[in-house]
Image (cartoon, rainbow, N blue to C red):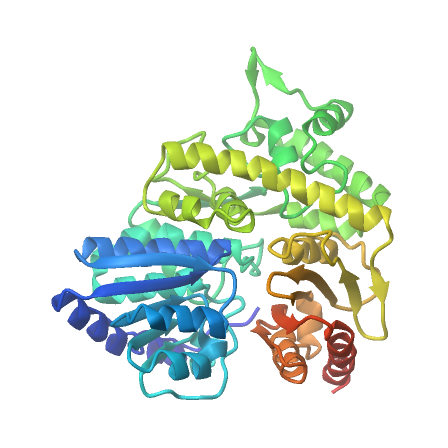
Length: 479
């Protein structure tokens, strides 16, 4: 996997100092700090880190999670006349808009996505890509926000678990045995040094040590298990058929309670099941990897496992309730947590419903260089990217091509979510670049990472856009 050059990493860490000084100066003046973050799980974790940071510094602040950054949103922020705006997990692809509409404010952008090539005078842009570091695998938006918090005060190292959660939420576990890479290893080391994190290698079902086995199966959506994810009754029947004892002396067993022989039997049964469901046999290997246990969290809670925590934040964000996730990141383990767990159940049901709609209706179309899924109003725009990721990861798409999914968004816009595999990226594919170039030609905006990217387009431009994407992808892969 891609290694991070030490000199580049040092330069990146040094790039935080000017932003730290600007923040301290505004807090000393008593100014209200405006935090704007992306409303996915990584963005919510980033917002939680920055909110914790400012609370500890005694600052006045306001935090919101936004599903997209566009001219209307930036104008609305500008109308607030904020002295300082912190953008987290977004902003790099919109520096020109920020310069135009926030000219009266100081702006700090903490991002890890592909940026536009401009250098506004009033913006401090911190991004690993500016230092030849990998923003898709090496560090998340929450990770960048964590390093910013630690630059200001080493005592903020106790926020490192949220940096880990953000990386897992962005599926940056691309190392050996599904481990984290690059600058994420620095964050991991900080968490372990404080006794806040432990890692081991095992099955990575949701709730590895906190949930009864049947629920662990049903609750697992990343990776998605067709026919089982979201359906506890089917999971219980599957486990019984596989010869797995569900209880021991009246107590429900968790995955950590299984013997090595039981795990081998379970793995074999899952392989047969996924092949039967039309997946590639290799897809089952996504169910084995490094477990990230957050030791500072209570056992038997959804935050004990890093991926489980990420799933909880993701559900809150995708179901339009990112404020619940923010409350949890800031320490609420009471009412917000109860509401978030209910939201997670609703989210799982929606995912299952959407995937049934895709598979039963034969909705996926194959073009020369890409697959497309046009959902219109049948899949929520906030969840279309999740559906695309699941379709790619399960091996249902048989050709070596990325998938470009779309859904109707508010304001007569079209939301685009594109996903590709690591192997495609190794062949030269960069979906972030594809989205940026194609959307510009269709009066839209786009960007992202090489294997996960997106765009927003005006209504009526979808077919033009998809034609451009198909052509550009072909050019990149053949180059």
